[in-house]
Image 1 (cartoon, rainbow, N blue to C red):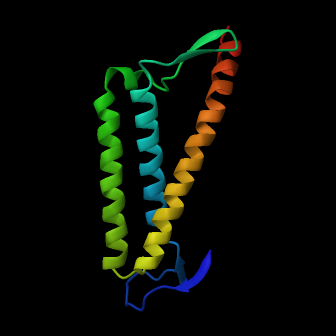
Image 2: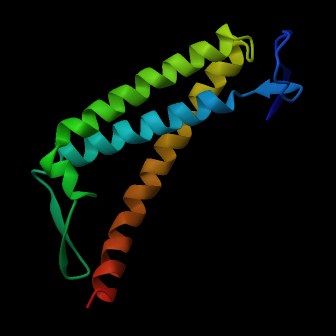
Image 3: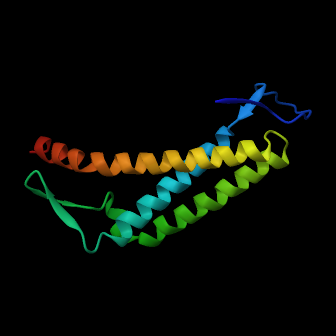
Length: 136
C-alpha cells in the first residue's frame, strides 16, 4: 500500500522489503471489529426486532446459537480483540513492523470490518428472501 520499509532486524524468515500496513494486525482487527459488531447488533437487538422480508417473517438472528448462548459471542469478540492487540504488540516486539505500520494495519482492519458489517446488514434481508423462495 505505502512503501515504508520494514525495521532493520536479522530474522530467520525474510519478508518483503516493505511492511505498510501490517497484514497480520489488519486481519486480526478486521475479525475483532466484525465479531463485535455482529455480537452487539444481533444479540442486543434480537429481542425487539423482527421483520417481514418477502412476505416471510425473518428473524434478525443470524444463527440460532445467538439466542441460546449469547455469552459465547460476547466472549469471542472480547477474545478476538485481546488477540488483536497481542498480535499487534508481537509484530513490533519481534521487529517485523514499526509502530506506525501496526497502527495503520489496525485502523484499516477496523475500517474494513465496519464496511463488511454494513454490507452484511444490507445483503442479509436479500439472502433471507432468496433462501425462503428456494426452500419451498
